[in-house]
Image (cartoon, rainbow, N blue to C red; front, top):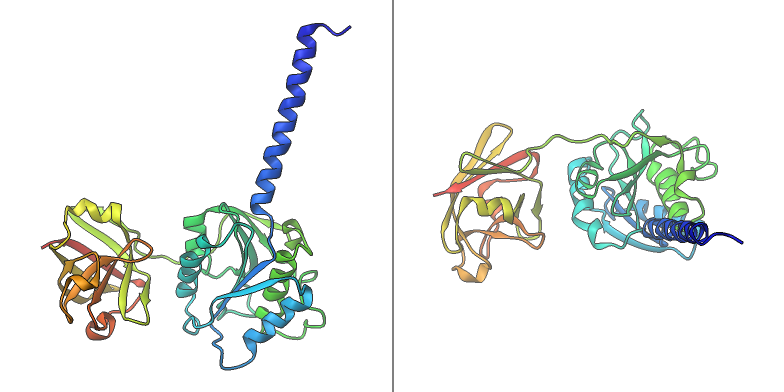
Length: 310
């Protein structure tokens, strides 16, 4: 007969083991691929490049669900590709696979990778800076280099300029459909990616500094990476004026004041405003007009902004 104390310990160990297995299964399922494949590129839709990528994906598995972030990234603009991913990915369920192809270095020594973020999203892309913002904001769980011997479209070895079709769409489809596991993508790399330098948001000596990562293209509004918590350190209230300075590299492009509002309807047409956009980041606009066009203010990692009380 087993002593009571030993029996209790035995049961406790079995329970602990079951809990650990359950936690592992939960962790795995939160990162498990879900048949969703989301594409982004700088290809545009004027020709068949995007359709070719989707055709390759469907050839891997007709059960895939295919979607797009955008294919209107300005040609070679890796920074904008990086921003559009982090703008979009958090709204997709864990397990979603993103294929992003903005690849001016196609055919060179830059690595082809799949990043798994701590949020459980997969990003299939060249490691050329595209992963800057998702790695920073969603966190790096693991990085693997694509094994192009195993994960490349059949009979495509002589094609050097369309890795979006031959490597990224093919690998992304295999991963999203669970044709391969994440480990089968290729060898594990250090938990780091190539990044693009930019002005990080900060509060210094009564001023808030940040970057202008992107424009709200349709309306010409200027979006920054300054969140409400940082902005509120200025102590500026709704209806008050904000002093704004904008720089490209070290050259001042704009200096002026804007009215702090919740919505554009609070001012007359033609009035410059500061507001918080749908991502809850500080932005600039003109009611019924185009701020970017009027003041020649654009976006990218070289564009910075300084806010202060008037």
